Picture 1 (cartoon, rainbow over the protein chains, first blue to last red):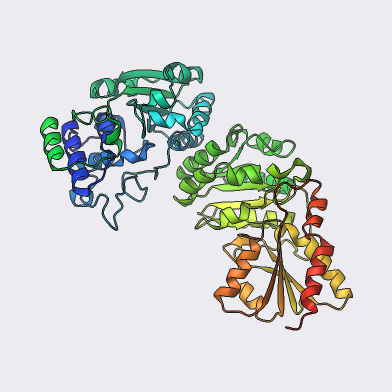
Picture 2: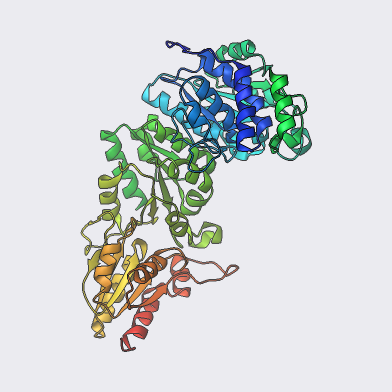
Length: 260
Length: 306
């Protein structure tokens, strides 16, 4: 973390266990999406994101549980607060709320993050302020036209303080993304709009960290993180149904056993 | 009004470097002076209103005050959800500048007629809505209120306008009342000229009216409305907008909320879809939103005993 130190070392295993435990306690789904981004968040918040000057936007708001768990692991949220997830009178809904410390923008409607991030990045440039902007989005969000408006804008304006990370897990709510809107050459598409593009294993924290650092002057950075929805729990991996389902007692025990 | 907006905004931006102007590729022969004065704070984002609204939210989060310029229909509708989840939800100082409220883009046809924009903005919490009557109000409203912390919608007419009776007065959450009489005409900014002319002619017929200019739609001028209507036999609202959700609804809600017994007639756009198009003058006349139409509405209530 540029200029700062992290009190605790983030562990993907710890974050995944928390995701399963909170999903079970609250009896809510979106588990597959949260597990998909666990390693990306661990990489981002283990030194890449400087909370003093950087801005992080979770465009795929439905995976906010993963971000809550990271905030709790970093000591930025108490575990008592985490235990209010999806209860009554809580700030911790399925989708993130900006009134919560550590959350910059409320999200949940897909395709907003890249434009919000481009706005923050442009404002930083205008005001001569330091810091990078990181947007984590899902591959299904590529269906949204507003994403491409932002991709065109950020490329044209050479917003090299903007990084978009694509959680490329190949799944969306009803079907595999390739069956819904098949985009086979995302890297070529974004490169043509003036972005630098890196493609990495989205579950390799060191590779992710290196990709986030591999910036190119005058180009926003697009990191395609190849991931597996439900990563770490065998019966959830690459299963569309785990976009929605909560776990029962037997599944809960098996999931924790596999995560370790 | 567009040119007054740009002229005042240049002046404000000279003294406040937080002000930036975004346009979704509109404003030919209008925005150029701003772009020349402040090239580093002018961005044509392209024909991409949804992106413009989220960009603005992001910029406002970083401390800037972005003005988002387009024709009122596109400005208020194409990025509506981005505005709702961005500027409104986070209460950020994003300003939507909708040009050509009502039928201002007459012959351009129904895709360009902004007849629901006020209604859409009114239902969003914490949004200031300003519909000035003339250039003087544009200047006053901008200078006094451009830096307010909440989001704002400015509904501007295309052409220049000046009503000496207003003398450039604009107050946040207030009405500007001109004259007095048994009947109140409450006009949205853009209908002020029609209302004032109807008032003059009705006076000659022996019917006395007070014209209340509602340029601050939100916050609603509730106290002023209650005070005004408590001494009136009848109230006519006039707006170049659908009768649902706009000024007429606002006045109806105020009357109901305060248990008032004043008779209300709401004049608004009642054309069904699929009608022919034409000039602003023609379209207003067809909907009874011209001087003759308003006078006829006032006469009808004036003839009925209270």
